[in-house]
Image (cartoon, rainbow, N blue to C red; front, side, top):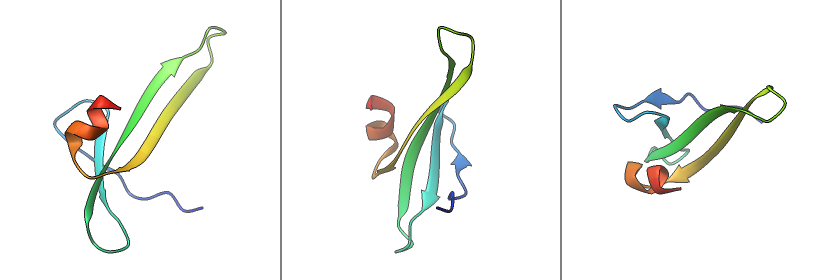
Length: 56
């Protein structure tokens, strides 16, 4: 699976990209450390607005 190029926005942890139909979509990437101290990342894509991505 190919990772899309995510471009940053002014909001922290929110990114935008173009999907296959050349529509602008939004995603979030939240980085954190779990209880054992290992760095992890939660990601989700395919939001139509940045506010939807922030709410998720």
